[in-house]
Amino acid sequence: MAVTALLVGLGNPGPRYAATRHNFGFMALDALIERARELGGAPRAALSSRKDMEAATISLPVLPGGAFAQFLCVKPLTFMNLSGRAVRGAMDFYGLTPADVLVVHDELDLPLGRMRAKRGGGNAGHNGLKSVTQELGTPDFVRLRLGIGRPEPGRDVAGYVLEPFRNDEFAVVRRVVPAAVDAVMTFLEEGLDAVMRKAGAFDATA
Image (cartoon, rainbow, N blue to C red; front, top):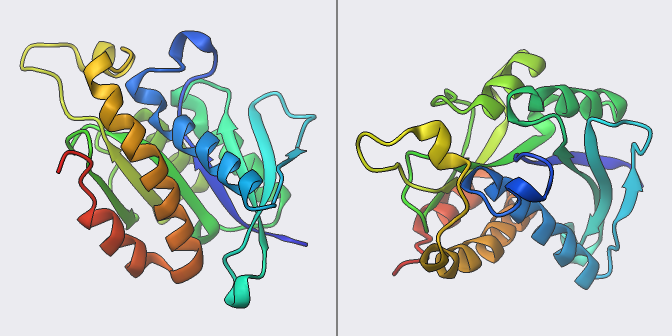
């Protein structure tokens, strides 16, 4: 079964960053892999010779009639500002194009509890997206944007995104993560327009 798309979660490697706002993409991708396991498409390690990523193939029942398709899940291990190297390496290895790439990432310009999907656009100061755009040579890949909100005026943004979610925020995070998995599944089954509607209507705080 051929890999049909590359699903990327952005974050920073290591336990120090595991629960931080900048690792929202990692959290969602881990949950997607677990969803695949529950649905019978157990993940298998991939590209294990590469040290710049954690990669696994998963199978999901997203084709007509509930048939399974295979996808590559990638978590870059290069730290955020070099994320694109792993994405480009995985894309080239499987003969994919930027149109086959979905990146899940944290988004300062959305409040916590909201998400949006789109293809292309700017990077809004996100170093992971900037790196992916540079390595792919185009911004025209799909993004699933998970809101984290902006810090209070005067606070350092770089420090804010590397802080763990507060205890009160985790109640919202726990609702966002499975909804993000549902959004990825919708994209794979029904396409961009459907996931844009689904993601745009979601509000974990409602």
